[in-house]
Length: 186
View 1 (cartoon, rainbow, N blue to C red):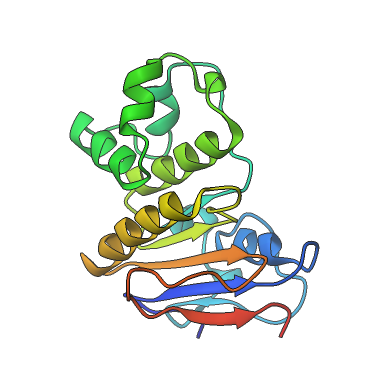
View 2: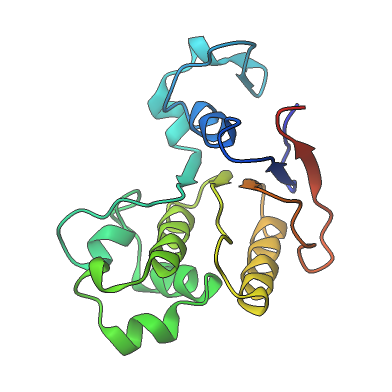
C-alpha cells in the first residue's frame, strides 16, 4: 500500500527513473506498464478514470495554463470554488501577496516557480483525498519551501487526505510531520 489518509509519502530518485510516470498512473492519466494498482482494494483497470479524478488531484512539474483569467485557471478542477477556497489555497502555497501585487488576469506573468505553486493551489482547490505533487519544491528558497511544507502538513492533518510527492533527493521534514520516504526505483 502506497498511502493511507494522513500520510505524507516522498518518491525520490534521479531524473528519468519514472517518478512522474508513477504519479500520472496513480491519477489514472496513463496506463500501468508493469505491476498493479488498486484504489481502496479495487483494481485500477475496473475503475473509471473520472472516479479516480474525483478524489485525486495532481500538480505537475510544469503546469499548463489555458487562456483566461487566473481565477478560471485555479478553479479548473472545481468550478464552484468560492473566493474563500481560492484565498485559502493561495495562502497555503504562499502566493497571496504575489497575486495581489501582480493582478489576477494572466497566469503567464508568473515565473516558473510561481506557476508551479499556482498549480499546487489549483490542485488544492479541487479538495482531493489524495494530492500528487511532482517536484513541488524545485527551485524554491529553503524558508519558502519549509513554510509551504508546514501548510500542506496541516492540510493533510485536517481531514482524510494524503500527499504523495516527488523529488530528486530526500527532502527536509514537513514541520515535524512524519514522511515515508521511498527511493524510486527501489
